[in-house]
Length: 332
Image 1 (cartoon, rainbow, N blue to C red):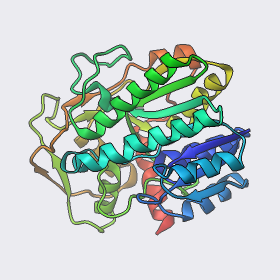
Image 2 (image 1 turned 120 degrees about the vertical axis):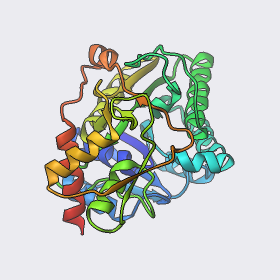
Image 3 (image 1 turned 90 degrees about the horizontal axis):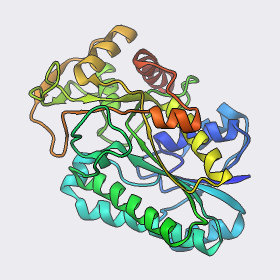
């Protein structure tokens, strides 16, 4: 059974591609490599011992997506492709709206043309904005604090309208929290191009001496130590959650929403200290001004996905820190 993974060379997409192959699916990846590298394809093959088909290009390219669907009998799509840096989205909102929304519209139009009406969408906890209550349930009010989050929320709205117009669609929207870690093999992990936007790659670049110091954005939030609190989830757990969601979609799920998180929040300083302890390294840091669009705390109530799909996070913060560092050490 052929599954199309958009953005499949990226951090989450690549780990999910591994889980798909291990679960017996045939995987087709499309990625423009704007924030990933081609050697990820070789690493996926090495981990799984299986082949994967790869197309280089942007999902905004209608002709390319049409070509992929014309050459393959795709049963479902896992849609990860999109720009994802909160700070950059604040400074370049039009870039984010154009890329993330156009790519999704293209994809849905081609899927409709080829009668492929099964999709798992990579959404985000950013659609909850600054949450009114914690932990966050799926029925919490939806709002956003930055353009990146707004693109996710608008796409959720598009998908809801598509389902309302045609109930033959099976759409599962996964709102996940903060993925960390790497595959246990050390062959794939989070490896962004340029200066990292996400916390863990930044910590690692400081730990390895590639960058001099970690900037922590604000220590005056209403949290136990003043730094932002997030629900960090191991990337392998997250990937396995997508497999569970795909299985439900292929059975005929209708429209579903699930949080993928651990249900526990850790502060930035807790993460830094855990990383230092687990890996026996020092991570010098400094406190700088808050980053536009950031919020104080955000963590999930993951009970719904456990009740409906039988999924829950199995790995802890120590595993995330150890595996993330192991990936970098092995690939240096």
